[in-house]
Length: 168
Image 1: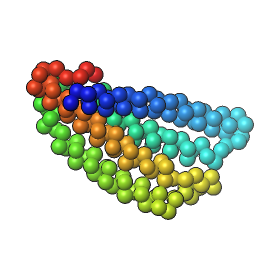
Image 2: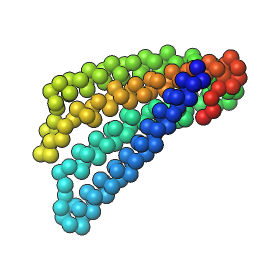
Image 3: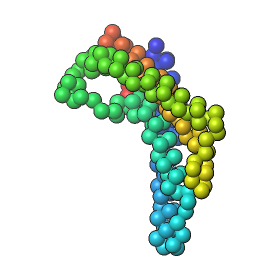
Image 4: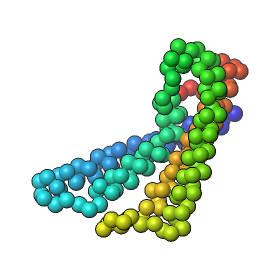
């Protein structure tokens, strides 16, 4: 159980390290557009659309990394003053809600992405980049989030049983 938790944590760590660069890429794209438009009167067709795609991928794929470090919103009124075992119990109680959410995103995201892949969907802009790769990040992000959620669940069980889980 501990090895599974460590492996999944490592996957989230690696994906987070890769996604960190997406913020820099997004910054570069936006700065390129601002400088080109403002100083050279040369706006681009692609910058707005590409920045939306990069931001979308960053947002959906970073969920597992955020979950790994407990960065998602909690109801502090019920959570913050609890012991590690108490927090683990609260996480165990709320896990079914998490599971329903993630499975819904995975199921509907897969249908949405698969339709896009089947028709090799392109953007309607003049630039017309393919949209299906970015739509595939939805089920991929849901899968990463699901396995990190299961790892956190197993870690919570370890904390409840032994008082010690894998460290964050």
